[in-house]
Length: 248
Image (cartoon, rainbow, N blue to C red; front, top):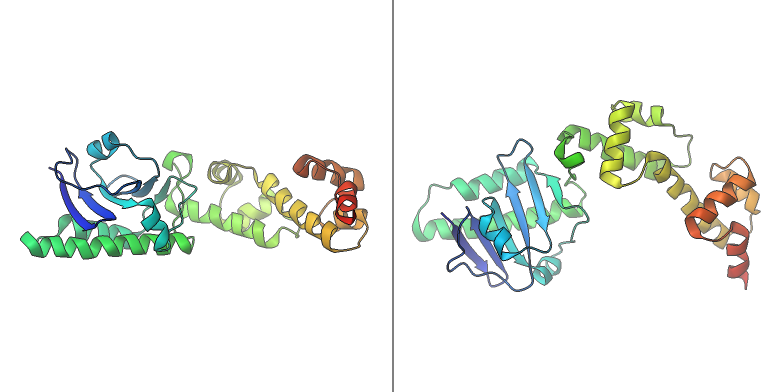
């Protein structure tokens, strides 16, 4: 049986599947769907929901106006689904399983619905919502390790990073790290490292007078030809031509 709480004109809390009946839906809404009892508990963001999908979805749903979500600090995520952390899971269970009745239950769920929304936004802002990878085949702990690998690349790209070194530092084997990293970030580890190095090289070309060959070497390229090829593939222009255009 479908239950609902109109938290505000901009947000409705839905529990269970079934016809919407009198449940009001905000205009131009998005849906946050909380699945607490799945093998891999998740929170999923549907940025283009249909009435049919909302009607048949038995998960706990927060249906919120897109502009309201952004106004209160929410950032629409790139990923569609994330591991559901224990803090959000506890709030969601409290909303669903509360033993109160009548108006007291409605008020309780209203307050908890606001708490669930605010805590989700907070975890998104601090990057503590970890995206699912490979359709959920990675455990939460493995996902944390892959996020740590990405952080290692972003912070230590100028070191001699190898796949083995990153795998050892993050506690994953090479195969799982390679596959999981591509699933989560849509690029290989080598591509992620190259992106950091080439972006830094571009900044140096535009802000320093160092020779092109020196900039390439400082960013991990042992000869000017390989640097120029990689730079051209990434930015569509050679390092020398980029600097010449800047000077002009």
